[in-house]
Length: 232
Image (cartoon, rainbow, N blue to C red; front, side, top):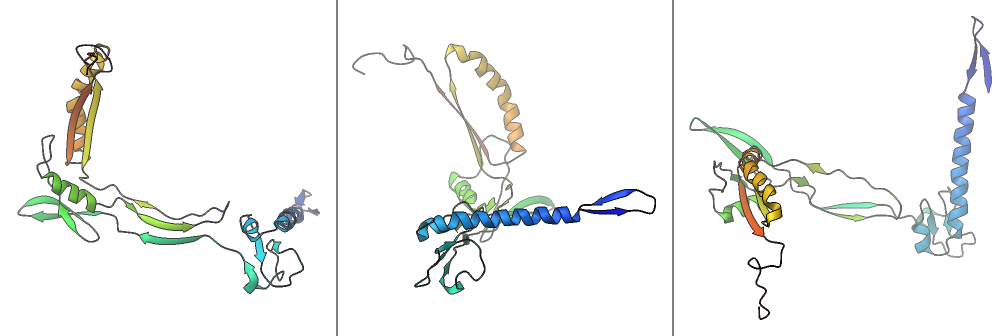
């Protein structure tokens, strides 16, 4: 601890020495932890699965083969210290929408890394294009990148990589309601009927390629909803 006095008589405490001592003690504590943990690993597999430990394969090595990050402890060519690896397998570019003017009308067009398709709008609940075209277009849309990666990670060691996301315009969306039509659900059915048009209107703000379906079931094993004849 260093004391200094300013011209005005105010005593100030300079904490630089204290901070340096704390950092040195912390580093020494970490080093001693590695030195205590690593030598206890007797196999290469156990050693490299322990954080900050390395394995020495040098023949006739008399010291513990598993050691921490100690300089000149083992020649580099004999040191086994695997690190995390990242390999990009598939990284198609994100869908990039753009606008163009054709015959005096604004027409939205989405481009892809290898192909593009022209989206169409519809005021009804059903898509005007065929199902095959819709599936083909959906397969070309890329909303997240990369799509496939290969990682080799060391135990208990964090690894970070970037993932990019962009919401594609006019992405096909199918919304299907499956509802219990028993008497106890009558009020819920009425609410759904009232909100159906509003929901479709809100979905058109997200995509023009939108389908709405409805299905029903009755969760009661009683006539006339379900046949109770033993033969059936």
